[in-house]
Amino acid sequence: METVKYLLDETDMPTSWYNVAADLPAPPPAVLHPGTMQPIGPADLAPLFPMALILQEVSSERAIEIPEEVQSIYRQWRPTPLYRARRLEKALDTPAKIYYKYEGVSPAGSHKPNTAVAQAYYNKQEGVKRLVTETGAGQWGSSLAFAGALFGLEVLVYMVKVSYHQKPYRRALMETYGARVVASPSEQTAAGRAILAAHPDSTGSLGIAISEAVEVAVQREDTKYALGSVLNHVLLHQTVIGQEALAQLELAGDYPDVVIGCTGGGSNFAGLAFPFIGAKLRGERDMRVVAVEPAACPSLTKGRYAYDFGDTAGMTPLTKMHTLGSSFVPSGIHAGGLRYHGMAPMVSHLVELGQIEPVAVQQLETFAAGLQFARAEGIIPAPESNHAVASTIREALRCKEEGTSKTILFNLSGHGHFDMTAYTDFMAGKLKDFEYSDEEVAMALAGLPSVG
Image (cartoon, rainbow, N blue to C red; front, side):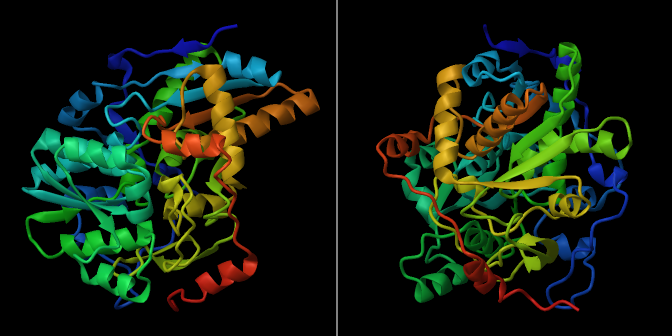
């Protein structure tokens, strides 16, 4: 019983991004200015983003054309393969059919170049010379570094300190592409110095790294900020994943009963799930959609749906999202890309509309799932992707117990070749589970901004 691969020709690659906002039964809450608490306009975002991305952020068009120059770069690795995981099915002895969309074939090894290339393109078009960003596990930082090299842009990356030390080869990859990488919190920014003054041993968080990157970005006119997840335009760029999966499943003569993705900020999840959710919202097909997050950073399962800052220093606009509070610093689990205090506002809105089921999984279960997957399918998943693998295995075993045959689709958002230390630690019994009590979560939420 062998794994089956479904491939599309590059002429079948999507030529537009899908915007789920066009199919929503109710629009998401407005984004607010942190000073006035009034809805923001394009001018408020201009210091951070080029106007083309700002317009995508607020667009309600269903299809937004992908520029030909971006498409030509996408063709280096897109369309990505869709696999039928027959060996994993056999190992689980399940009647379920398991498919996975594999984004690890990109130059940077994850789904992140789908938006990094687009963002670099639009910044270059507007005359930007330098991009500043944050990164957790390093997948986003390495992807933006790759895109910056293609378009001749200088890239500065603030990397969460715990990941900076855990993942030296991710850092080396960014530097190979020409980026400069700084461990966050750092002494280079006022935000970083304030955190270090209060917590000298801080391991950092994505919220802190965002504060540092935003602070630097607004200081020079030739510099813009780039974000790897959370915002609408980022999720939009990732929808090439789900659009390709729809076409590939048509080749297979199948359609998913369950769609699964890991969630931290929400980009790879949205990239796979939003085209399917759109079909569901339009009444064309039906399926369950499952968002899987770490129990150590449970914004969807334990957070509050409220207005909050996207960063720790309170420099960003306020968005309504599932949040643990912008001051929340999660434990140093190896899934660094999922260690963010908030969830994408659009993902959060769809959870509120009942279109998405959130699930939390512990670290040890995810790595056990990753090992089982690797030994069956031969691909070593990134620690983030292991959350989707773990949930997929849960669903497949439930089918076995119930004697039902369902079709499961999940996004294998990246490979784990730069994360082998995490696997070594797991196999040596050095990793442990983390979970926050309701009391700890309540304390983190106590500092939410007051919005009338």
